[in-house]
Image (cartoon, rainbow, N blue to C red; front, top):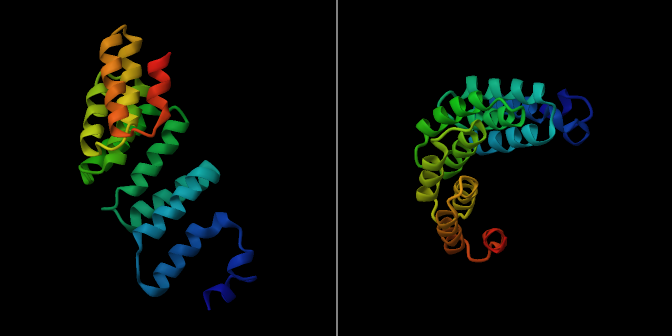
Length: 177
């Protein structure tokens, strides 16, 4: 019925309208599926115009104020626009809502790093604690300390990155140069 109401059917609709279509389906069935909403928001952030993504993110925040995913995706848009203060604020709030979410912690560390905050190293360490099998926080923190002339500390962090992800070639590259 919903597909018929929208004219040419689901497959003919532009993908940009997926978020609105999802909200209509959710309202029709009275079901909010945060996984589906997250997929749609990720698509909008990755491929849609920022204004459309921001509107959908705002709608998602209103529909599920306890869900940190819209905050996370809004922070991604903020970082893309070099609005690092805003990204830090949004990611701090999202991380407070889900303190054990390693992706949120890593994104917050990146935002702090882009802002030039001295708290970035501690944030990367926290992200590494939350997900010890990921090399990215170790690599990013190694680059920070290397830039300050702390080559031994950088090497230690890169070795930790290799331990976290032995098949990841990136820390090996940085060790080699």
